[in-house]
Length: 297
Image (cartoon, rainbow, N blue to C red; front, side, top):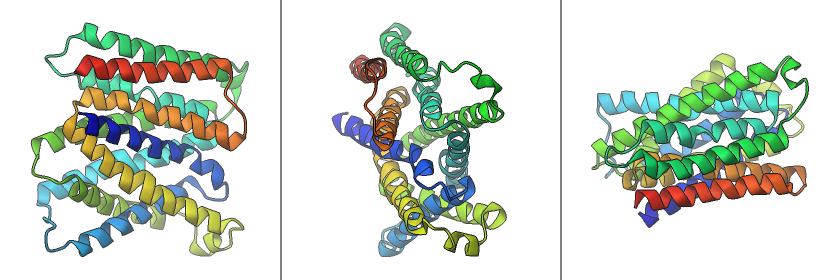
């Protein structure tokens, strides 16, 4: 259990990086950034599969189709929607909306032998942290009149729904296929995500000449590769380890760490310390995780 919890928290720390990536690469469109990230992920996965081809088990048709579905829900579609939302709203509000994923996963993935009353303290602390952070950051009169505000909200909610479905389905799949190695499944998902991202870029991405003419092309390439290798491949491997060892509801609560790290990275990028209210909200998130872990023991 400790190994699963540690893996889930580490995955959240890596996932938090993707919330500041769009702000680090203003010259890239959402499609270009999402494609660059997952083509890097797919490229590494392909190399690893070739390196261990003697022991790698080729997926059957059902496994291949499920990998394509999961790569869309948890990777290309999710991240494209998230980047679109960040472009409209900035980092913090999308991070908070994505931060409700633990609530949805916990409600939908609760073990049958776990009483609701055991989950309420963790859920309450998580919800209180979300409300407190919202009050601290987004009491903006007239914000709903901004032409892109509700569009950004829609993208963030759609991203949240996409990743919630991924978390539940992926956890169920791994538990029903215990013979699958976490690394093999991560590489299979990476291959599917890379191929899907490449097709998305061919259909909707910027022309290669435009990308090569970017002034910050070195930074853009670095961010795409770093988020592809670290926040996609390694985070997927860690999350698969957590999904195989923990219930879906506990995994869902560990996703709160993604929101915490996303906010911390955003504060660091902007160069200011969180206010007392923001810090208190982060503490509530942390306490929610700890209380939920205790409830699952």
